[in-house]
Image 1 (tube, protein in one colour):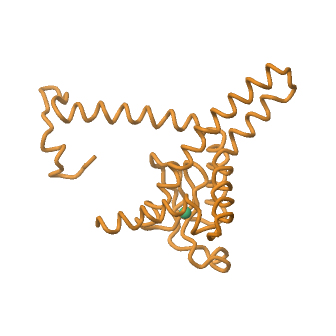
Image 2: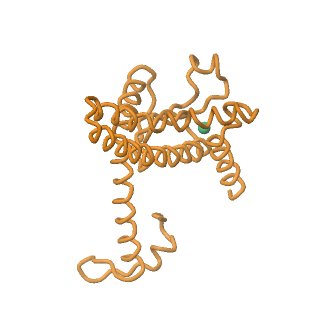
Length: 198
Ligand SMILES: [Zn+2]
């Protein structure tokens, strides 16, 4: 939603006495509020993996430095440049999504790229949650002892398992494990699209 002067939504905004908003802008705000609730549901679906992600981001902040940035896409450590320790073995590295957050170097290109990975992560975590619930139900029906622990492990690993599956599929199709996996193909395609759109 535009927030600067002259934005289309601001032009339509009508403020009643007392500061309440009516009309198109009010409806837009209601829609935005509903969207935020939806995003909170996605944060719930990703909670166990996100706790590990945020711990890793904060630890990286202590050891590497950089600027912490909190957005609806999560908690990010934004670095001015690729750390030399990483650049030594991966010169083109620009970031990594660990969940709702991660590490990335500054720049719009990486924001677009990692934004796609966040959405992919959310899809994987919703699927992992469903799978864990099913696993828990079966374990309890069978009287298994460690059902909840195993279900939590499956749920937590949802994003990692989805990425590993994409790598396996790429290798089995004879493509590059990184650039040929469907998750990276989608992220790089989004970069190209956003760049073309200006
Ligand atoms: Zn990527």
